[in-house]
Amino acid sequence: MLSEITVCVKGGGDIASGVAWRLRRCGFRVLITELSRPMAVRRKVAFCEAVYDGHAEVEGTEAILIREATDSYPVWENGKIPLLVDPECMAARRIHSDVIVDAILAKRNTGTSISDAPLVIALGPGFEVGKHAHFVVETHRGHHLGRLLTEGSAEPNTGVPGPIMGVTTDRVLRAPEEGVWQSETEIGDMVKKGDPVGSVAGQPVHASIDGVVRGMIRPGTPVRKGLKIGDIDPRGIKAYCFTISEKALAISGGVLEGILRSFV
Image 1 (spheres, rainbow, N blue to C red):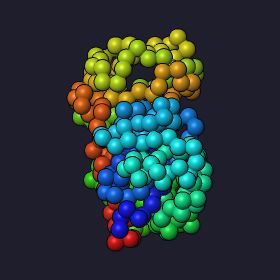
Image 2 (image 1 turned 90 degrees about the vertical axis):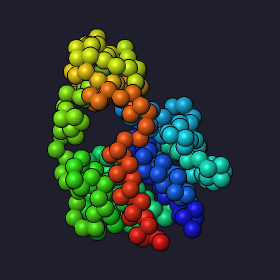
Image 3 (image 1 turned 135 degrees about the vertical axis):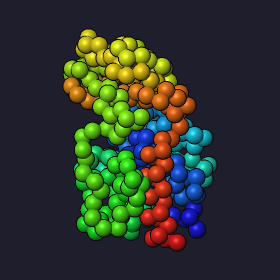
């Protein structure tokens, strides 16, 4: 039964959360492991916000912050997702995880091994099938997005954000200086090109396009120069700020396929 399969998802950002959300809805027992200070941009659809608030809800599914791996069991019984601050993912061994999904999306392997669990699935570049993981899921926007790879590696990182309505780099907000991010807008706000959206170390950050603020890191967060701190969606549809993206759903489908091919 799917409810007897335990999946540990490394990472609680929007893509990882889309994976965790889909797997939980399919009946799997899911545990998310995260950093002590996650910096998700799409915070309204990221379970990692539970690190700060104790809980986080994404499209009707709730994640609960726990103190140790064994606290997962009562959370699962309540139909929710436990989330643990555990950067090394040590909890996977403590709960005898059947599957580990590396959804950190660091564009490189930060320590995942194919021997970490009976099934290891990695998302995006930096992993090779058969060497680092049993399967790799393509994360690059395009024809192969979400495809489960049974050999080779995902497409390399281009450094250019995927296009939305033809807009790439201009939709991303980046820190102009090192300092502390202070926002003047909220996720879901409509902005025009040139509007101030916040500042870092007294340096203003302006919108480069018209659209809706789809994501933004938490105010008061220390940042380095050039760090991605926000995202403007040129489609201008506010509902998209609060629902799982088509990219996350496609990738989660690839992960689900990998698990079903291995256990069913």
